Length: 252
Image: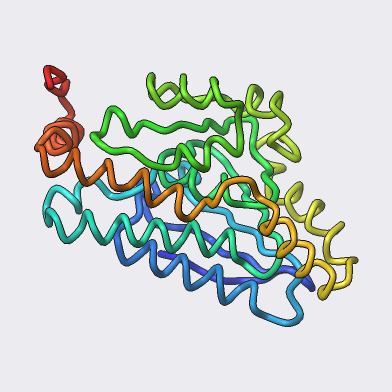
């Protein structure tokens, strides 16, 4: 369990998130994930990396309980860890296919939004519950998946989006029954492994070079507001309410 690297077909590498019960990642997990994705894409024989998860969902974001228990140090660590993991997906030398089932929340959106291709199970949902958790971030990455006004609606309301609707925006390469998810991802990867590894790497680099938004700077800008909310104490109430499983005080 944890962050695992494996391979089951020539030209592919897998990075698997397996952090029970809901794949909510601690600070160390985010940095481990960043290292695993970078290493997976660096192999000269690799043409595509699959990023997937075991368990009930793809990723539930950061471990809020760790932040509440450790305070500032864990919050700063989570901010830096998320930034490192998202950047690793973006900067991976080869295309990254995100393979999504169940819930994809918070930091999960950061990973998927920076991936090159996304394959989802029909049961997948995508959401940013940050406003309800006293945080901001990954709107940068959600904006790569849905149109501007839909992104704003999802941020303000914290309401999730089903895979079927996400597919309507052209963001998903495929939506398949859950039992067929991994096979579908490998079928897509199979198209890429027939390509020249040198050309694939230059294609990835060139596509990143023409992006209209610097995703790393944009995300770090968002994170600054998370820390502001933390310092003012508003975020602490939201996070503690989540831990206590109660309604948060929203008077501030």
